[in-house]
Length: 184
Image (cartoon, rainbow, N blue to C red; front, side):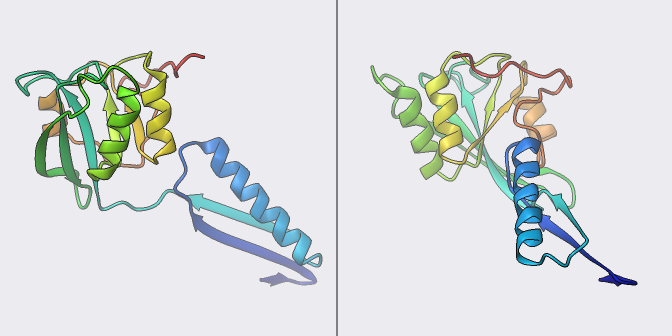
């Protein structure tokens, strides 16, 4: 648009990124590219929003018996896949309990589980701990596009009653206190 002799560009974009830093970096690159391609533009403003997600699949590591969230990932006996509809209000549509085929593997168990969960349609994984010692699993999740969601102390009942929907910060526990990322 123009205002007198000045030219302005204003845009709204949707970004599916895992951090604000990444979103700001992308927006800065877009603004610089516009200035480079159109030197007569006086001001560029790009606003970004997270994508509007209507439904998604959340994986939850489960203890033997299927009644408690497991704090182990690669060796969790099973995973509960929750199909969540986010609009108009978050609610659980369906759930599937799948036995972990890699629970007894000796090596690369966490990475294999992450790959398996991605193939099963999971888009995010609940991690019910403050810290993640199993870095391979954590990094495999991120590399596969699965969002790790740290939620210490979360129960299955809480998940079923109030399922989480994006946008959410993957490293923000329910208490609002920032959780510790994997070390190393």
